[in-house]
Image 1 (cartoon, rainbow, N blue to C red):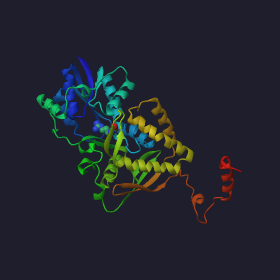
Image 2: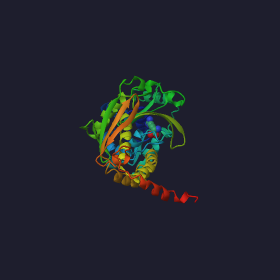
Image 3: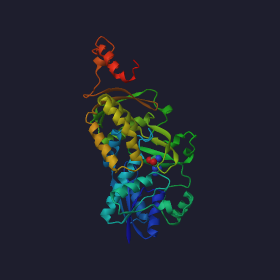
Image 4: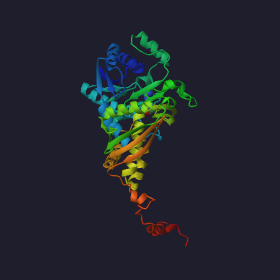
Length: 390
Ligand code: ARG
């Protein structure tokens, strides 16, 4: 019997995948990757077994997800199309990596996922798996199976005694992890319609946020966030804590139309309270400690880094090379940033660092001024020389 490792979430699609693959002669190993989606994994494991999986793995990927995927992306200040902080995009290559490892451990010849043929996630799973082990066969049941609608799929699940917690009327498609949440479908498919409040899962509406602003301080050490208000946290706890704090202030909502890799535009809702605070703080600290040329050059790489993550090219050589560069730039990104959270906004209002390049005696307009203004005349003359008419 051919063995296959399926990325299993416990939802309708991947549950039907188990049965569908079994009917086609596969022995199915379900792999559940815990990237902080906060599900009841025991229940999901049971569901996989009842549905026909031979074996279930639950991988706690949270620490690796944060260390190896989230932090490098934060350090790159990478946001797809300037807005999407990539929570879903980053979770796919790590799950794919573990599917491949599980396939090796189980001596399976194939892996499978429950992504549709219209999205980015299929690309991320498959390109990653192919880079890591080109010999593994990849099966994508949802792309080929015969169901024409969600209703048909649910009927099939019921006929086959697949336990489900879904109803025929599903409002949104939601993908969640520690770094954020992606919400699609339903009324959101109309890009003119304002997202109803029930679409949001981690943030309160800005208008319902507290009437007074909240100030918080975030410390970084070499580009890695380490403290909130002077208190040390592990990375996972720091992100959880910030999600909670900033979520209460309505921070981190994004409503955008984005360009998918497969050529369609889609309307997406994202929530990433912690990520939003950390991006703002990290970028600001860099502006204090990186010299102009390094900062400007680094800024040109952010969009490229985001594209590589979004496009499923996490394990490409270009991404590896960019990582080496970015790591080098983080050596002095140590210091504290003060943020003001208020009704959906997160603004940097203060920053300090032992590596600060800011010199008050040069910037000031008071009597403390040490800037020799006479030097400016010669500088401007030389700088503007190529453009002088006479
Ligand atoms: N558009 C986003 C992305 O490509 C979110 C995808 C959400 N995925 C999902 N399975 N609901 O990363």
